[in-house]
Image (cartoon, rainbow, N blue to C red; front, side, top):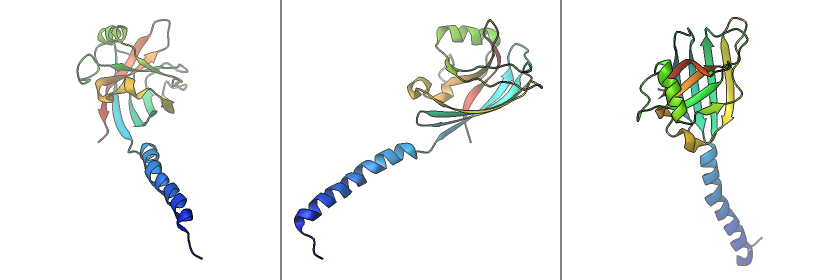
Length: 163
């Protein structure tokens, strides 16, 4: 069987188009995820402690939270709030968290984790986020909140790159 030049040209053009376009989309889909850790410390004597792990791949943010000392059977919304400095330096006192939140638009992650009968949370969820709001994540604080009539921070921590 012989190939005529009129057959080879369209086949070559299709193959070239696949080589050029597929890697671009594959690179986005298979880009190395960015991983971060958070050590949650109590705010205003709440007694809530824990850890969080965040994985950002494209516009998908996977959040894993393990926290203790919460009210039993209560939801604890998550907010990611920009720190006042160029890099989040730590978890500020409750008053500073409240003041910082009023001056910025926190990124609220819904659904919220809910504690069990012992006041513990083990939670994992993947959120679709606007990445432009969260760049770079190391400039933000991760806050677990009380879902009472007034939003109050229960625990927060600095978002640091996973090592």
